Length: 418
Ligand SMILES: [Zn+2]
Image 1 (cartoon, rainbow, N blue to C red):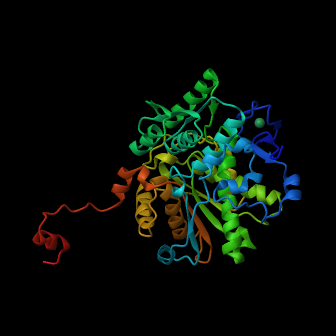
Image 2: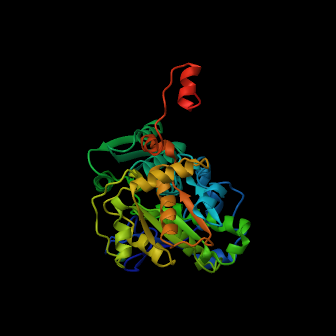
Image 3: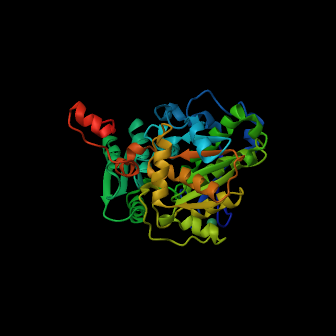
């Protein structure tokens, strides 16, 4: 077995073998961390040999808890390995010397969630699962549906009926069985778990299935590899880097933290970048816990236009609090108005972010205003999803378009040149 692993509960610390358990700790419902055989990996690989030539997240297959039996991963090979930009216009505008944006909207279904779904589908194939199910605000479902379609795996998606139409269209085009729940994401989440138990389906739910964080950790590997190649001064002190991540259920920030913890465990990095979680003021359960210095997550009644991070009860909240607490980061909350402004600013350098994707940049702007981030701090911001996913929100961020008569006279009047 190449990729041997065990599970460890993030609450009570109990360890379980891979065939003992599938989702969360039976004692306390804690999320399970996947622990790899770090000693063996260290003996076989070096920081450079661990990265294969694959231009996708599968370049780190040796650090993932899945195999590639009979090449089933081949159709999944397009997730990850997203570009990093250095938008000077934005850096100058907000007064930073070093600003990078990693654009996850370049994933195959246009969001960060492809990383999780690719690895969960690989795991589903190992388990010979007939059906994979997930609850989703839209992106995780689209990612699961897309990855499932790529390997002819049957997928069932529960989404709130209020999900943006583009996200629902993606689910349907990829051929998933879609059920729109007349309720919140949290209600869809609970229903999908009950359905999985009832029908014996394999459940991908975020903050429930331990393999989602394993897929998401590959973004940390990519940042590590990218910094090592492109910013040598920072690679010697990775703790100097600040990373801004939007947070809903908490699984992206905890997945990225896990990736860095793997590298730390392997001795391939000395310190972990500071992780800053950004939440909407209207959906801030993790930020509330962080600011109260507790790991007890109290649900909120979520109200934000950023649907992908609109969550009443974050299912990976404890690890999300730790991701910031254990790295010297913080939680920042932003208003919907600040998120819309961020969409506009990112757009000016050619990055089209959905509200949840732009929230991270809005958080950075606020962190600078509050002097949490200083001008000399190197910062990387993650855009987690494409603006094409929620065009209605994007239109709220931009000025109204003039409609003109098809005449030169009317054109001049509109351009103000008459
Ligand atoms: Zn436990």
